[in-house]
Image (cartoon, rainbow, N blue to C red; front, side):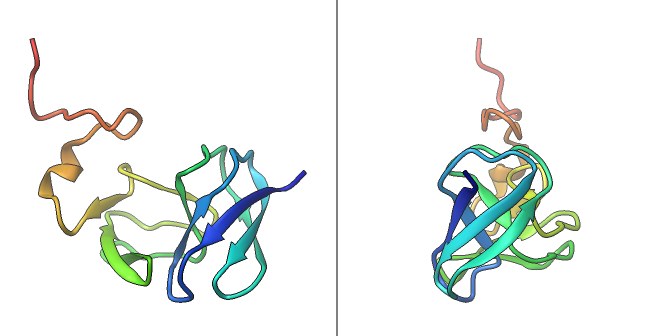
Amino acid sequence: MMAKAFRIHPDDNVAVLLDDCAPGPVAVLGAGGMAEICATAAIKSGHKVALVGIEAGRPIVKYGQRIGHATQPIEPGQWVHLHNCASDYDERSATLDGQTGAPTDTRYE
């Protein structure tokens, strides 16, 4: 069965995965009608996947709103997360661990 992702708003350049996906085809449902992209890697459910190429510095758009910006080029089908984007609202987001989301700028002992 093909993994699914949901595009919330027609202007979004990312979709949210509804299923864990392996590299390969992902059905994109929601705003803008049905489409298909090719995931470039395994991505967990609930995470964002790029629907189009996004140049470094360009906005990440979800809910029809800019939620951040790409910190490096992002290819269609690529996982969009802390390793390649940063929040426009929380400057600390750039210091969070890309896998766990834990702060890396504060030591807890």
